[in-house]
Image (cartoon, rainbow, N blue to C red):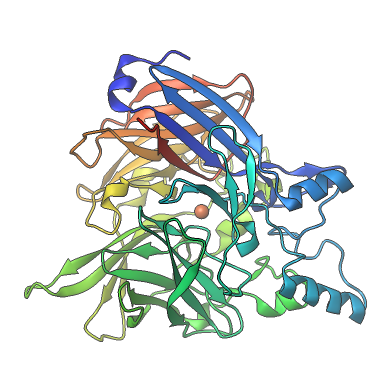
Length: 474
Ligand SMILES: [Fe+2]
């Protein structure tokens, strides 16, 4: 496609990549949940006023085995136990398969990230799912082999990546906590920076994502906790691999980025969030850090979003039924003065974005700093899934929305204009699927939130989760 002048002014040459589940049926087996599908990358490259695209399945061991055998052989999110084990021997086999990692999937279908050294990694929540890909050809290069000896089955699927480091959390299922680990750019060796001790329940809270400020790492602990007994018994709970334990409390922990020490651990109102948007430090009158502000896409302390993403729910023709859980931009205030409790409040009237907010991005230059704009998927009610894009202004407490009937847009990813000075100087890119089965990349001017281009694919595209931007090397 030939691009418009407006877009060429706003966008440098480079490649947008998006990862997500793209294949939910193998042989006669159909997956149950959107999180289960085999990872599919989509690429749109912008070069001198032209856009070209491609897509490709990640060649994970799980996908290749399923293709060879005509059915899944590894455990995806909702298929912890494809065949219920009947005997003690089956149960022992399950435990061995899980503890050794052989039964877990390496289906890296959630995020795609350029590391500081230029390598591009795709991830999901099992550590074995860390896969390197070629951003130009979309070839699967192979596993990202960690050279350390840090044993752990799980990881946060949203590490914080800077030009110099990679920070992530490794949940410790048996000692109820998380190791905070750091890996220098160019290295394959993670080093433990510190450890967070979870305070409630029998297992750590699920950490799909977390936030950082300039000096701290913010570790959430919500009542949706990993189900250790469910995993060991190879059984699904009502929340798949989690237990919802509201009586176990909700907490926020603050870890110092330089010392690894936990400097605050406060109880907060109950919450349910998959994605943290950003966090920053707010100074007190003396110039010291008074509180940490941490924002997230929050579901009013209700885990129903997990079941709302089951495929039979998403494929339901009841489009006029308002069947999607309400969400809001929620803000934690975490005191650093030793107080026992933190606050949680709604930042913007949720009706401004249709009571839907998920799959968010910000200007990356503002990560860890005070910021104003959030780009996210929103909702136009009634709906049973995200069906709009929203730009939320945290200062003016309002939103601009993009909506087209019958279209399903995925995460709007912000790309800054080269040389831009305003926080919203740039574009957001989202891949849209239409009810007619078509697919295109939508490019919006981030400031006005108006369309500046759409790049049509000659075929439909599956829904996806998260993207990234790789500037073209000059
Ligand atoms: Fe995510």
